Each structure stands twice: as C-alpha cells, then as structure tokens.
Length: 492
Image (cartoon, rainbow, N blue to C red; front, side, top):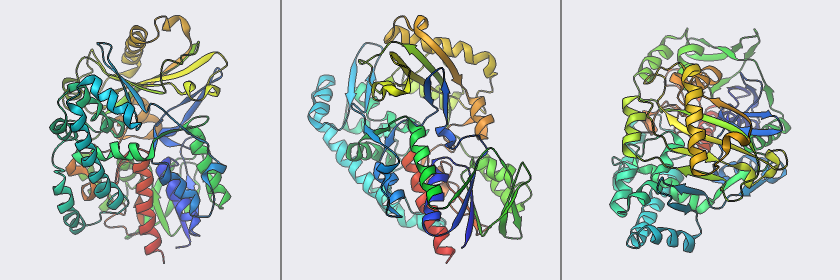
C-alpha cells in the first residue's frame, strides 16, 4: 500500500493516520470542520479556552506509542499534567468521595462510607485487573472480523461473567450504594449504562489505577494539536474545512474519496473515522453492500447524547477539583429515563470539568473555565426542539451548580453557551445526535460492533467509537492500532 485517505481528524483518525504515515504510507487526512479534533473540538471566547471534550486522558502510554513508532517523544509536543484526585464524587446529601489511585487515601474514603466494604473493594480490584488483562491488553487492539474470533475469546469473557452488568458485578463486591455508584459510573464516560454495560468495562478502574488520569496543558485541544504536528512532521497531509461527499467504489474496491468542494483523491485504501452510520448511509450511498450494512446498523442501539454547558466565571475556585461528578437524587431510575424511556427528567447527574484548577492559562487572570455535562436521551428517543429546551435546561444546570458549589454563579458568569444533541448531529453528522456511537452492550461489542474492515470492500476500513473496541480516548486509539495492523498487513 502506497497511499491512504483517512476521513475525520478525531482522535481515532489522527492516531490511524500517524500509524500509517510512520509506516511509510502516504496518508491524507480529510476533516469536515475548520479545526481538527472531532469531538475534541475547541472554542476560544472572551479570553477563555473551552474544550468540547473529551477531557479525561487515561492510559497515556497508548498515546506515547504513536510518537515512539518513529523514535520521537510525545513530550516534545504535549505536556501531560497529572490530575489528583481523579474525580470528586458528590451526592445531594453533601457526601464527598475523592476517587484516586492513592491507595491509603482511597481506602480511607471507602471506610468513611462503610468500613466493611474495604475488603470487598480489594476483591473488586482483583476482578478489574483480570478483565483489564483479558479485555484490554489481549483483546483491545485485536480486530474481530469473523465469528470464530469471537468464539476464541468467549472462554475468557465467560470466566469474568461478561454477560453481567458492571453495576451487578460491583454490587456483588460492595454493599454501600454510594460506593456502588462510585465504582460503576465510569461506563457513562464511554456512553454505557452501568446497569446494562458488560462487566468487562470494569477494566476502566484498573486502567486508571495503573496509568493515572491526566490533562494536557492548554487543554485537550493541545493533545490534538500535538498529534497534528507529529503527523505533518512525518509528511502527512491534513485537509480542513472540506467534508467528504462520497467514498468512491468500483466493484468491491474503494478507489478514493470526493469532497464537497469537488476535490478528488485516488488512493490504495480508505479509512473512515466519521460517524459509522453517516459513513455507510451517506458516504457509501451508491454501494449496494454498504446499504445492506447500513440497514443492520440502523437496528442497533445507540448511546445517549449529551447536553454541555460551557461557562467562564469571575473568581478562582481552588476548592473545586478538576473533575467532579455531582450525582442527582436517583441513579437507576435516571439511567432508565435516559437509556430506555427517552425522558428528559426533572433531575440529572452532572460531570463538572474545571480545568483552570490545574492550568490557570485556560481563563483570563482571576477567572475560571468550567463545563457541566449531563447525559440526555438521543434524538431517536427524545426528538426535542433544542432551541427551545436548551436554554431551560442550561438554567436548571447552572442553578444546581449554584446551589451545590458556586452560590452567586449567575452574577459571576462572564460568558456561556451550550452544546446540545442537535449540535452533535449537525456538526459531527452523529446518528441520532449520539455522543458515543453504538451503545457498549455485550451484543454490540467486539465482533458485534461495526468491523474495523468492511466485510465486502476489502480496502475499506473503519476507526473510532463505532468500531471495536469503542469510545473514549484509549478505545478509539486502540481501534486505530487494530485497524492499522489490518491495513499494513494487507498492504504488503
């Protein structure tokens, strides 16, 4: 293989493009938006830097490997800063729980909730280490292209009761309800319902414990910028603000792509980091086998969307950590409303991001940058007019942060805006406005996800949240490793 086009400069597309270019494949990365990053977009307003997300960086080694392929050091382009605690979890009754990999401190936090759960936590950690070994280290970077590969993985998945949910596994080790929430909420960061997502995702706990939680100085956008700088240094070409209109196919081969501006690229292979439904439904509209795949994908379950309020405020808040989870009064019932009933509930749980406590340069001096994120149903379950609903929900979220953390928040706000499911659909061509693509349940994992290589077009590949292993930075960077391996083996 001499040349490739990668569609979409999100983390998955960037990681794949770096791997291909490092291996000597002339790679062109085509991005629809005016800036790279995909879901990791960035806005600069009134002196504040607002990362669109994602903001939790785990397993930094999977990123460092991208530079190591060509003998470079990621630290030349990106400054990763440790975040501690990883998260502060807060409940409406005022209980705080600081979650980290500082073992003595974490044990003390658990004992504060229920001393009897300390032993149960240690057993859960052993379980998490096992699924991390089997599910992430062994299977996270392997492409599942046929059912036989799934059968080979089945014994290890069965050993860890992969058919059970993360919450039910956690509940089998600890009895305190707050601790059950503290050890199971992580799946929400990759679009999964803790009550239904496979227990394999308990590996996230071990992933964070071993690798820590990090933040790129200047914001996640600086990690994106570092990846772009490295890709271009290797000789790769990035084309911005020119959406791909069609993946051109002839028979069972992809021959190139055509963009909205009329530009055409011929290449030996095409890989799409675009939304998986958008890729099959729109970019491959003229291909019969792709339309059959599209019909199968339409029947699958998609992750919820997000409603994100970005706001810059006067004052600094050293007492509010970098990452907070503000739980609402309900856990299971709220998850059912979001995932099953398609209800925009009166109550909500929030992820609060406060980057200026780690890096004050993301706001003007004496000010702070925040965002508050609430999971909400996707547009297929809740087809709202977000121009009407958005301002109402924005005020309710800011009121709640005012009640729990910043009493005079409305007087302090210098600038604010929100990002709704309709924006995910418009800006990212995300099917149903989903923020994480396919929901990570067992029957939509590994072989049952969209394949890293198309079943009928052998030089057409996929990378990102919709393919194996799934969403989150380690997930999409892992998908790039799996997809690059296929492309380079078949391109020889």
